[in-house]
Image 1 (cartoon, rainbow, N blue to C red):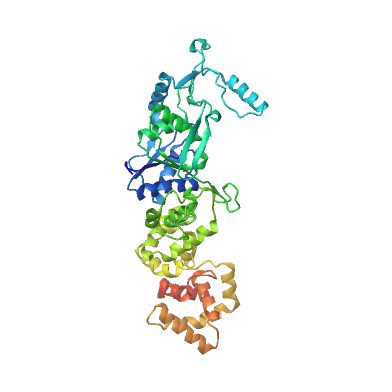
Image 2: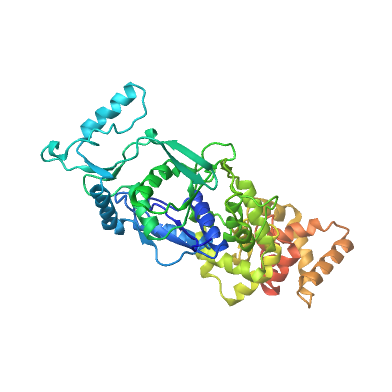
Amino acid sequence: MSSPVITRFAPSPTGYLHIGGGRTALFNWAYARKHGGKMLLRIEDTDRERSTAEAIDAIIEGLTWLGLDWAGEPVSQYGRAARHREVAELLLAQGKAYRCYCSPQELDEMRARAEAEKRPIRYDGTWRDRDPSEAPAGVRPAIRFRAPQEGETVVDDAVQGRVVIPNKDLDDLIILRSDGNPTYNLSVVVDDHDMGVTHIIRGVDHLTNAARQTQIYMAMGWRVPHMSHIPLIHGPDGAKLSKRHGALGVEAYRAMGYLPEAMRNYLARLGWSHGDDEIFSTEQMVEWFNLEQIGKSAARFDFAKLENLNGHYIRHMADDVLLRQFIDFLPHADGGKAMLAKIDDAMMAKLLRALPGLKERAKTLVELLKGAQFLFAERPLAMDEKARQIIDDGGRAALVGLIPVLESQSNWISHDLEIAVKSYAEAQGVKLGKLAQPLRAALTGTSTSPGIFDVLDVLGRDEALARLRDQAS
């Protein structure tokens, strides 16, 4: 490519960074990286009533957690309003735009007539060719783009193909409101041009806007960026993605215990594919990514697939890396801050030793947290119903017999502890499970845990024996 690739992610800060936005950002980021270019971040904050500083922070935090960086400082679209007005005035001076003095009432009547006649609702060009001297007194005009009325506008889209829209279907859109505020389609064109954007990758719901924006580019004599309109994300039932499907903010997925690496992998596969590859690193995605392999049909979000993929990443992640991810996750989890306050060097060492057993049973960091609860429990342990039943139904007697066996162990490691307990079980003529269940209940307060000998090992001699004695007495 002759010029460096510049993409942009341009969210509106009217709420959280939703999952579809996260995927759009990922595709822009990956394409720029693939071609040695850069992705810019523009905050489209022209809706002053709905745009909030909290939403901007959430977008930036969400992108940072996903591991998607951008070049330079985020650009505020609202902060460039003067430049947008300048271009509107330039189009006006060149006769490519005109002043429209229609009142809100006249526009409402225009709409009503179109609805009654079952025509598309479009501006009818009332002021397109009228002399401004006819303007009513005291009315502040809007500025409308003088769209071509004949022929067609073509969008050569890398995903959707060649899209042809008859110009008669595109009316004269407002580019500057009567209060002097620029409109979305003008602002986007000016910003993308001024920022040097070469490739626009965004949702297919912007395809109609692409035709309008192409007309503005051409009126200004500016190069039209390469465009790619990617499919929307639907739920597994094919319906529009809603909260019940997973239309949540990126921060919600973080709180649910998903890893950013797994999210990048999963989002990449929503609408884009590389053969039959389902699991791949971010580096592989960047190497393989292209626009031609993005499908036209809507992608389907599937929590079960995401969870299974996340479990794969947890199981295959190096323990020290996973521990750092777990620690970073705790402030965002229910009860995580209290747990974080208890983590000192000794607890970090325990967690690291426990991770090989914990991560085999966890698909999310939330499940990892639940599995690790026994490390943080304070004596005497609170017992859940199943654990209490195990202790009461013969478990207490089993513990009384086991405690001397364990007290006699000079080498407190899982392998040696397992041999000792198995030997005791054989000598007593009982199955190992009859001993492992009360051990698990007494040591963790639950009926499920990592391997019980790993639990004994990680807790250490003093803590483990103290917990057993609590329940044996």
